[in-house]
Image (cartoon, rainbow, N blue to C red; front, side):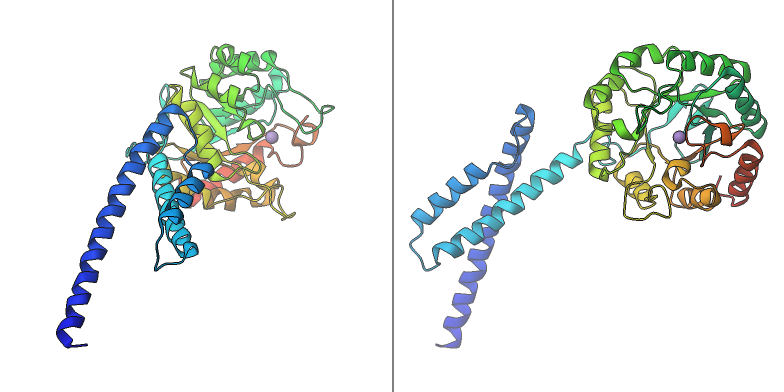
Length: 356
Ligand SMILES: [Mn+2]
C-alpha cells in the first residue's frame, strides 16, 4: 500500500470519527429532551424494556463486519452514557443544589442568622422534662451567650417503654422560657398534623433522623414558612439526605438546614460514626446551612470538643450539643448530655480554637 493511500484512509477515518461524534451529540441532545419530558411526566428515566427493543432492532439491521455481540456492547455503552447525562441534568436541577443557586441560604430567626460564615452553637436538653429543668438550662445558656436552644417535646424513642416526651405541654414550656430569656428554640415534630401548630410555639422545627424519609412529614414541613432543621437518617446516604431536603424546599419552604448526626457503621467506640466528610460535600453540593450534632454522633462526652472543632474546621455553619442540669437523672440520653459546668468548659475550648 502506497504512503498516499494510507494517508487517504486515515483521513477518511478521521472524518467518520467526527461524523460519529456529531451523531452521538445529536443523539444525546434528543435524549436530554426526552429526559426532561419524562421528568415532567414523572416517568422513570431508565426503561430496560425500551433499551432491549432498541438493541434488538440494531442487531436485526446489523450486516457486519461487527458481531451482534459487539454491536450490543457498543450501543449499551452509548445508552449508559446518555443515562448518566440525564442523571447529571436531574441533579443540576435540584432546588437545593449549589448549581441551581450559588449563594448560601441564610436562615433568619429574628436577630439570629444561621449560615453565611459565622458559625453558631446550639445547645439544650435532649428532652423537655419540666419547666424548672428548661429554665435552669436556659439561664445558663443565656449567660454563656447562646442564642438558640434545643429541647425535645416529642421523643421518637427506640423502645415504646422509654420516655416519649411531654408533647404539646413541652412546646409550651419551651415558648415560655424562651420568651423570658430572649432565646430562639428548636424542637422535633414527629406528626405531620402537629407541624402547623408547632409554628406557634417554636422558631425551628426539627425533623429527626428516624423521620428523615417520612415523606408526609417532609411535605407538611414544606407547606409552612417556619425554618426546618433536617437531621440525616441513621443509615441515609448523602444523596437520600439531599433529596429529603428537596421534598421540603420543593413545597415552598426554602428555610432548610441540614444536620449531620452520625451514621451507623460497625464501629462501637462511638454511638454512631460522625461523618465529617458529609460537611464539605453538603456545603459544595447544596446552598443550605450545614450543622453537626456532636452529642448523638459520638454518644460520649470526652470527645465532644475535638469533634466540634473538626466540624467547624470542615466548614460547618454550627454545632449542636445537649446540656442538662443533672444528666444523671435525665429521662433520655443520660450518658451523653453535658452538665452546665461541662458545657461552659466545652464551649470555651471550642471558642479557643478561633473557629467560632
Ligand atoms: Mn438526645
